[in-house]
Image (tube, rainbow, N blue to C red; front, side):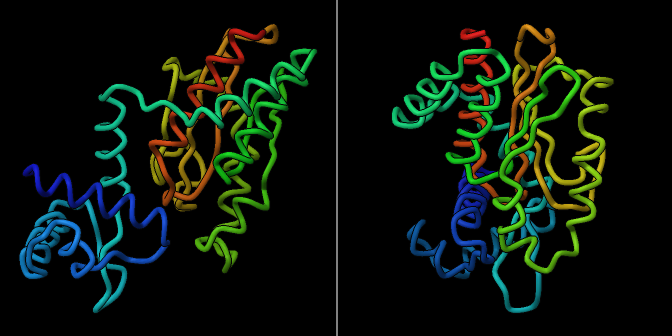
Length: 232
């Protein structure tokens, strides 16, 4: 992939996260200061490589799971982006008010829900605490309700899967079909492992549509895991 193709893919992913609509060549042409024809040629190459797709004729392009994975791997390999100071303060304040470990974890999840607008989740002992279902199902991708069953299946099986798989990375990202359950639900699971009084493999994270601001959400989830480990 050429440097310009990387920039175009990044622009498509980040723009699509904001507007929830296919990104056209005319918009990108203005951003990059080149002709629409040049952008269309680059988009055709990215599409042939499987990083973007055209949802319907005469539409712009949207990222594929492969495109998101490339983007996530790229930003994960860079110096970790820091959450906004306001977000850090909000998370720290909620944890300080938590008192007992269970309350601190619940407060951290609720704060992630407020900051990311995704569904938030965490393991507390052998239970899975979930908050923000309305956030997830309020996203444009789920208005039709066709994927609700897949999402519900994922959530029903997530706690036993986490216990069995026990991901070892401080931050793990499962995009779309990479999810062990609910592979056609078009959601991404971002989780951080942390040590707690309940387990050395406790998890906190978010579940949202594949169309989301990965850089910000990944940074916030990682920060939540680190902060919980320090507090607990």
